[in-house]
Length: 300
Image 1 (cartoon, one colour):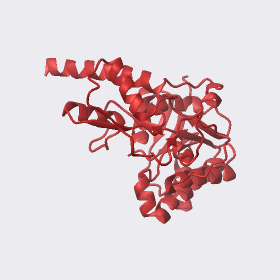
Image 2: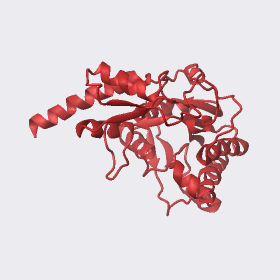
Image 3: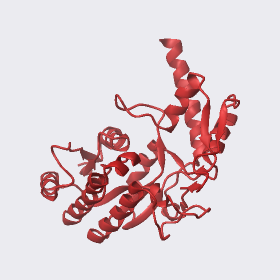
């Protein structure tokens, strides 16, 4: 007899990350997982009873919690609503996971580092004072989730992108915005006072299975990058031999208080989890994207 498949519950399955998790673990590694991706009607994460009922029905072995209000402006505009979802909802998922002995991964954010004046890549054990509502909510979620479930794994994710679209009306990400502007010959303006990792979402999805083996705690989880955003895009253009004349330095954004969201990844690397550096991954993905588009053009 074959190995019994594990039950995987995924929240936020209609979102950028969650939709790709469901696609990957529900189809590409189908022989290992039965995936349950409840809708809002099937499980309202802000209501403990609704979460309890969903867990009781499915009885997951693993949980990946992606549901969140990730729009920074929306969090600033409606902080009570976003706190209820981002913090209370996350705590409910972590708490239910503990009761049902399910390994729980919570999608966090590098925004917890926003406001720090540290110039080096950030480590997980720093004292943090996030300067925006979203960052404070993500930090609050980490604290509350670990309080109710010490075995919970909190993954601080960076800015993510994909070269393909999974769902209709999917919002533009870093790569697709760049590709569109380049196609229509618009100027490409990127900040010089902003440093952060930019990660291929497919690497995040693929590495989540290894994250199931991590001990409870907080982990930086994304691509390393030692360049500011302008330098990152310029390095990409140079590697692909694209014209850099249209690249413009934005020297106003974050000028008063430079933003550094770059993360030290030594903790996850000690556990055998690695991500390609930002520029290398972008370059390789762009090359594949251009080859695929050329094939489509030739055979259409």
